[in-house]
Length: 68
Image 1 (tube, rainbow, N blue to C red):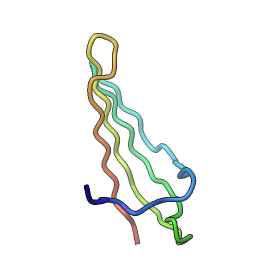
Image 2: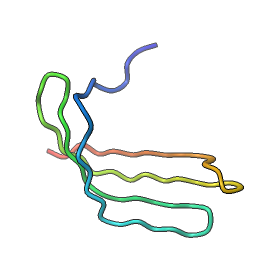
Image 3: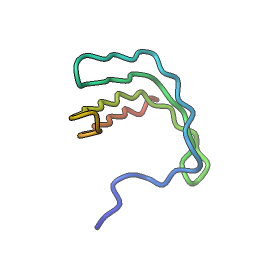
Image 4: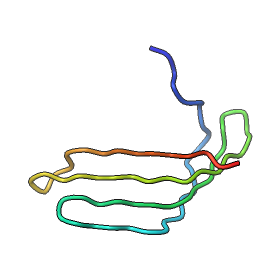
């Protein structure tokens, strides 16, 4: 199976701008920064959506947009 994303070093630093909850859905919106495996820095915006069912995690959708 091909690798779809470049390898990263360590964990990214995340800054949460907004957290929205309605019913069984939680949305987190923010920005982050990290390093690719070669050491180059990258900055990104993100939006993560968590859906719950019966008090348990049912679905996670994560979107990231690399920023120049």
